[in-house]
Image 1 (cartoon, rainbow, N blue to C red):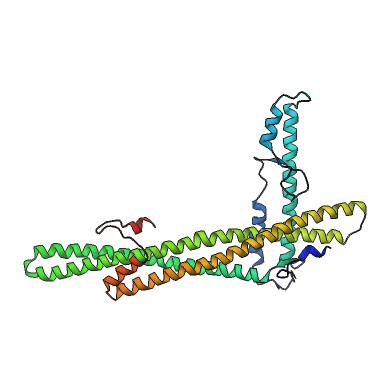
Image 2: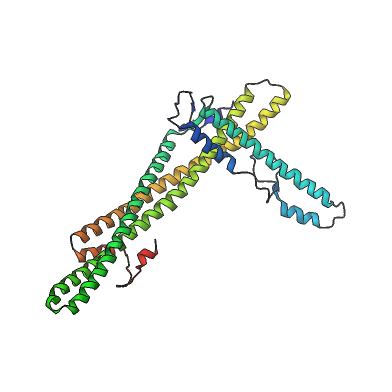
Length: 343
């Protein structure tokens, strides 16, 4: 086989042994999930196209069906196609798409099963896969922090609402109890102050929750979508590599040589796709790391300063923490603060 099959030093082909060298895996569950992922992207038969060239080739020579229909509907001085011929042509075209999709799915499924049961090899970029696994682990841990921060927000909101109601009750009793007017009045003012500071703290915590949510469910998720595309491309690459290797070990008659040439073209196309997506994932992981550090540095500083100031009773420092990060609160006395509406 050509020396160009594995041209990247950082990428290596690792045999999968039956004793689980590739890692501890719940084989039944993960195999079923991976097979579902392989099968999920079937051919789109609503928007078909006639493609010249082999499978996995370039987009040159692609004629949209809509354009084909338009040209067929125009009278021609040379020939014209009947509606029956047009329907037959479209049926053949769709069948060809299903056939190509089926072949690709079969090869990928065969490769996946071969990897799971130790009868084949897979291409592994150790450094990149370590970074990907670290991202997934980080995302799980950040999701735990987000869940706890949301719970803190909900509990503290209920506390602030209770303090507001208690302050109103003390204020009412202060007016109706002359003998305890001063005592009720002190407590009413205390609860109102606590309520005000609580609203300020909630604004800071909510800003923290919103930012972490964006980091997890937008920034990290976008990178993981590219990772999934990369992993699919890796599986296809290895599937067509294995197919080429298997053909290369067989007889060299004319028919086999023709099949080897087609297999070589398919392999090269999937190699290019795999290497492009590997590069895309590498770049996105680097940018994500930089963005994560920047965002978390700001959010953790805000969270620490706001919590510390509130429980130290330092109202001025608490308000300064929000001003530092340009956080605006709703107007005082609002039953539904803006921070809650953003949840």
